[in-house]
Image 1 (cartoon, rainbow, N blue to C red):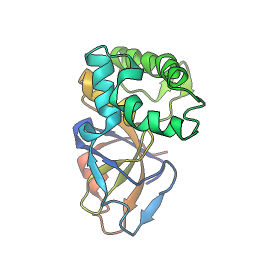
Image 2 (cartoon, one colour; image 1 turned 60 degrees about the vertical axis):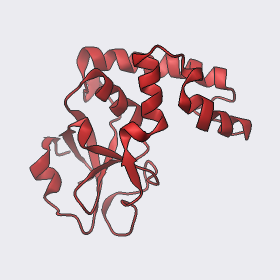
Image 3 (cartoon, rainbow, N blue to C red; image 1 turned 90 degrees about the vertical axis):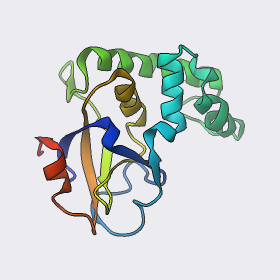
Image 4 (cartoon, one colour; image 1 turned 180 degrees about the vertical axis):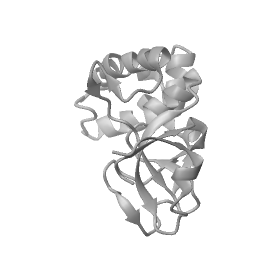
Length: 176
């Protein structure tokens, strides 16, 4: 299912807390699908609400004051930035235009004839759609804006899941 793109309501998506971007592909066993939460419980979602709904600057959101401050203090480089100020500027330059584009156009496969990288979604053993670490900001933005469906690559399916889950619950946009 890795090449398939589905149209999924953002409220159907959960966040996999231990699923890296390109870790899973295909039919996979194991417990990777168990450690998850609702998107609204994540710092990324709460920070998007703070920024886009309440007008709080990125550097004063829970994500920046919490996780990012700690990682930068430990010497980690995040999105090419070594300071909170630089990271906030990168967010303003990269994410704020994405938010405006989503408000105007919704989720799209292409922007100015180039392919847009879509969020990766994995199907858990219970049929739940679980976001990996790619696309959380965009899905949070879609929820804030009220977009009814997001486009996502279904990248992995748990071996114990009903294999027809995605085919019956969500619309297939592109089968690759």
